[in-house]
Image (cartoon, rainbow over all chains, first blue to last red; front, side, top):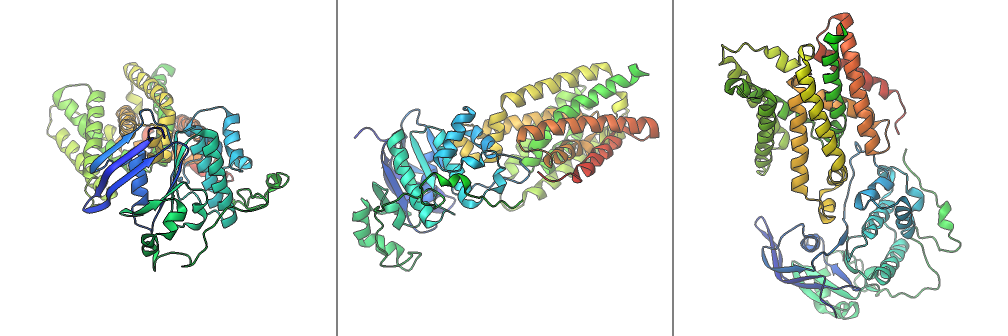
Length: 260
Length: 260
C-alpha cells in the first residue's frame, strides 16, 4: 500500500483541562473508506479536526502528505439569514469552476434542481447533499465527512453510502467518515474505528461488530437495538438520494417544499 | 454654488460607495457593534493626532487597528460577553477622546463636527484622500472577495479549503479601520455605523446573491448621501443626520417590497 495521506502516531489532544483524545494511531489511505464510530462526546469531531488541521495535536506526531487537498463536509453549517446566498454561489466559494461543473456536482448528488435556490430554504437532507457536492467539487485527495447522513432518511442514507463508494472508485480519494450510528455505514466501509477518547477497537466491520469492546461501548447508550443485524448490500433496485426507486430518472420532478 | 457643493458631494459619495460592501460584511458577520466601537475609538485617534500634530487619517487608522487587536485579546477570556466588552471599550475610548481634546485648549476643535460629521467643510484635498482610500478599499475587497466571503460562510470550511483565517480577519479589520478613518469627517463618529448597516440592511430584502447585496448597498448609500444633502440644502438641517435619515427612509421603502 502506498504512503498514507494522513498518519497519526500516538496523538493526544487536550482542549482546556480535558484530554479529548488519547494516544490515537490512525492512518488514512487513498481508495479506503475509514469510519469513525462512537457515542456522542467521544471526540470524533475533534479527531476529524486534527486530520483537517483545524486542531493541533497536544502531543504525538501527525504527518500529512505534502499538498494534500481535503474536501470537508462539516456536521453543522448554518448560514445566517442576513447573507443572501444561492446554492450555486455557495459552491463557487469552494472552487470558482465553470457553472456546468457546479451543475454536474449537484447532479451527482441528485439535487441539480436546487442550483439557484437560496441556501436558507433547503431542507436538512437537501443541504447535506449540497455540502457533499461542495466537498466533491474540490477534487480532493481526502474527503472528511462528519455525519453525512444527518437528516437523510434511511433509504436515502443507503444511496448516500453507495455514492461514496462510487466516488472513491472514480476519484481514487480516501474517505474519513464519522458516524454515531453504525448499521448502515458498515457495508460501505473498509475499516471501522471505535472511538471513546481512545481507540477501543478497530478493524474490518465484521471483526469490529464481533468485538466485545464495541458492544461495551454502546451498551446502554444509543445503540438502536442490541441485536441489530449487520446491514449488507443486497438489493435488486437502486435508490436515489431522495429515497425514490431510481427508475427513469424520475427525481427530476421530485417536489421540494420550501417554506417561503 | 456648485464649486462649493461638489467636494462634499463627492466625498460623501466615495464614503457611501465603500460603506456598501463593507456594511454588507458588518451585517453578515454581526459586527455592527464592533464597527461602532472602532468608530468611537476613532475620536481618541483624532485627539491624539491633534496633540502630536500628525495626520488625522493615519492616527485614526492606527487607533482603530490597535483597538481591534485589544478587542480580539479581550475576547479570549470567557467571563464577559462580547457585547459587554464592546460597550465598555466604546465608551471608555469616547470619554478618553473627549478628555484628550479638552486638555488641548489651544486647539480649537469642533467636537460636534467629529461626532456628527461636517461634510460641508470638506475641501478638494480631502476628496483626493477619500477617493484614493475608496479605490484602495474597493480594490482590496474585489481581490479578496472569495476569501472574505468564504470566511463569512464558515471559518472551518474556509480554512480547510486553504483560506488563512487570521490574515483574512486582519484584512477585514484593516479595511474597516480605513473606512472609519475616512468617514469620520463626513458623517462623524456616532453616525458611521448607520451608514454601514442601514444601506446593507435595505439591500438584503432585494438581493439573491452576496454581490447583489454589496452593490445595492453602495447604491442605496449614495442615494442616501444625495438625499441627505438635498434635505440639508432645502431644510437647513445638519448634513450627517440628514444622510442617516435619508438612509432610514430608503430602508422603510424597501420594507414594502416582497422578501426574496
